[in-house]
Image (cartoon, rainbow, N blue to C red; front, side, top):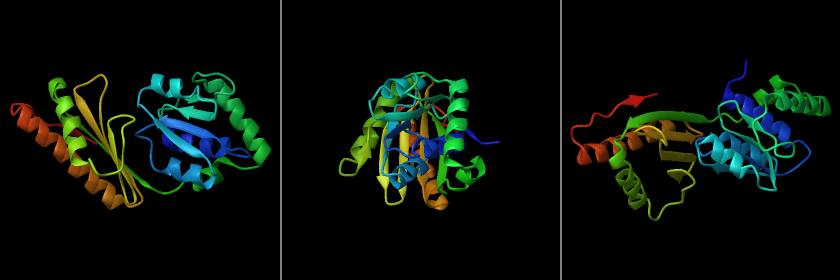
Length: 208
């Protein structure tokens, strides 16, 4: 059985078969997708993390596949909506056309680390966390699609506020697992530090 991430990576490879274009997914999607897109002379474009944001971005003329990263797949040339039945039909079509197997495609997924943690953050402190991140990385390469994604030599680390809960997501994806672990710990400490300074009574909770 394929995980949501592996299924998305397999479908991304199939979508790029014989064509160039744009695949879209949440900013938290692993580094593997940018690598796959580069291999096919195409693009992986991050969106805000919510499913609605993914679908809005999927209306772009170059979009050939979009996913919410949780099992929802959209094929914009058919309909700008998540459609499981059409996904099955499209996968069977592309597998027949390419002669590839799901196992072979899964084996080709670039091996990267993808680590995540959740940090408690009161609503009133969320803006301060974001400002701290921006001030810390004024001269660095960042992406502000959702939260602050900081690019490092072998990948990136993302600090993004949860839209519905008093939490921050800290996610790192790099080619080195140890580096990803260290980045998640470093930026989790940063969030906890800002929360502690702003609201000493709050207790930081980490979930992995």
